[in-house]
Structure formats: structure tokens, C-alpha cells
Amino acid sequence: MTDTDLTHPQQAHQSHEAVAQLREIALGAMSAAAVRAALRLGVAEELGDTPATVEELAQTVSAEPRALRRLLRALASHGIFAEQPDGRFAHTDASRLLRADAPRSLRYISLWSTEPWTWQAWPRLDEAVRSGKSVFPDLHGKQFFDYLHEDAPESAEMFDRAMSQSSVQSAKDVTAALDLTGVDTVADIGGGQGIVLASLLERHPALRGALLDLPGVIATADPRLREGGALADRARLVPGDCRVDIPIRADLYLIKNILEWDDESTARTLRNVVSAASPGARVVIIENLVDETVSMKFTTAMDLLLLLNVGGRKHTKESLLTLIDQAGLRRGEIRVVNPSLHMFECTLPG
Image 1 (spheres, rainbow, N blue to C red):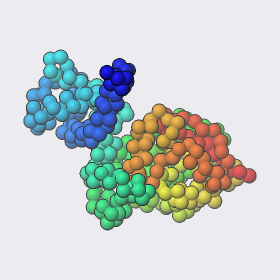
Image 2: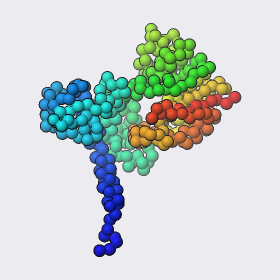
Image 3: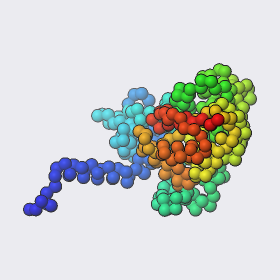
Image 4: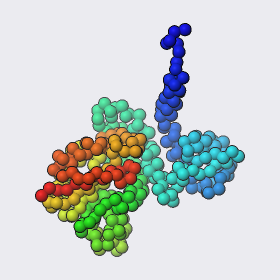
């Protein structure tokens, strides 16, 4: 027997771990599909605080009991639901996040991330990596958002719900982290329905704000901001495209999770902010980073999804700072908002 025939126990252990890790990743589509199936069946909603048998759950969600047990067992191996010694299933912290009424629910984000178009796009990731461009036009003959609104209205609705859900959860963190000392007016650029802006106005009774987004988005803005809403007298709704023009003067410009397009569109948006702002105005950019974050598995996955659907990307700290410098903004403090968001404080020189 030669030395090459001998395998160190630690190497064998590492090899087994590597096999298990790669095998789990390669079968990751199963995990995503299992989460989607549980959501569409309504298992998390039907399972209460008391553990239930598979037969009881199967009856309430109209499923075949043996198949449902297989689904729940697969999810339980990932900590989503837990199988009790007597065979009943109970909620875990993770499975409760599938409920719509959970404080930090991931229901709509999980559904959005597993919409039918995703299963068509992911297998073509190698093409996107070779070209550096979206595969969507080749798949569907049109751009991503055109496809959503024209051909997949249910998916478009799920996107809106997912974005609203994400905004509700992050709005509290952003509102708590943002220092508005000396700020009288804030402009939320590309702020969607304005959930963050509404939260800021509620927290600061003397603050006034403006929300800029596409006309269709502005039309469905947070009811608190629309005419007759509790905050309407301090809010201005501005339909427009921040990549074209920003016709708003404010003390602080808030840019959250929209610098994800191609670099030219991102640079153009920042230049438009600089053109609109007065010297000394603050610009606060809030983004998911693909480095220096504890949420890298999430942010890097979203980064690849952006490449597939719109040809965009999430930023590293340095790539975002480079764009900030190129726009002519003065760098300030970089702070962690929550495990997946970083806040870049900038000012307009002068």
C-alpha cells in the first residue's frame, strides 16, 4: 500500500461535507418548488399553533395525504415545519414566515421568486454570463416588465405585492436609521408606492415629502399619501422617470434599491439627482450589497436574477462608491441598516 492509497480522516470528512453541500445546491430547485407548493396549497395558513396530523392538513388543503407527507418531510429537512415524534407536523420560525400575517412575512417574496417565468430563465444563466445581458428578450420577444404587464398579469401582481411587502419591512429599519436633523423636505426617488416616505412623514410631523415614480406606480401610491389620506397635505406625488428627469427640489434625496439597472441608467439617475439638488443637499443611497454583508446568499442570488431578467446587477461597496464619485457626489458615512441593506450618506458639494 502506498501513501496515495491512504486518505486522512479529516480529508474524508471534508470530502463528505463537500459532496453533501454540492448535492444540496444542485437540487436547490426542489427546495424552491417545495416552498412554492406549500404556499399554493396554503399549508402554513391552515396549520395553527397546535401540531396537526398529515391527514388533518390534507383534508383542509385538498391534498393526497401520502404526497403531502413527502412534501412536508422535504421542507422539514430545511427547518421549514417540524415533524414530531408522533408523526404530526408543527410550525417553526421559518414556516411561520410563509403566513401572510407574520410580522416579517416572506410569503409574496417567496411566490415572486418562484413564478413560472423563473423556471424558464434560470436554465439559461450560462448564456447571460457569456453575454452579460438579459435572456428575457430571447425567451419572450419583449423586455421583462413589458412581458409582466402584457402577458403575465398574475406575476405582475405578485411582483407588486412582493415589493410592497419588502418595503413595509424595510421602512421601519430605514426610518429608524435615517437622521433627519435639519431636514424639512425629503424626496423619495423611484420609491414605489411610497411606504418608506409615509413612514418618515409619520415619524416626523413637521416633515414634507415628494414621491417620484412612473405614472402607473404613482396611481397606486400608499393611501396615506393620496388625496384624502392622512399625510396627503404634506406629500406631493410626482409621476415621472428618474432616469429622464427629477423635477424636485429637496433637502434630502432618498434612493432605495433602484440603482440596479445597467451602469449607464444608474449613472444617469445619479446625474439627474445632482442636477435637481441644491449645493449642500443630502443624498442617501440604500442598497443590497454583494460583498461585506451577512446576507450574501440572498444578495448574490438577487444579483443573478437581475442579470437574467433585466441585465442589471447588485453592487459591491466599491462599484457603488465609484458611481457616486463619477456623479460628483461627496462621500459620507456608510452604515448598516439591517442584515441586507447598507446606507450610503452623500452630499452635493458647494
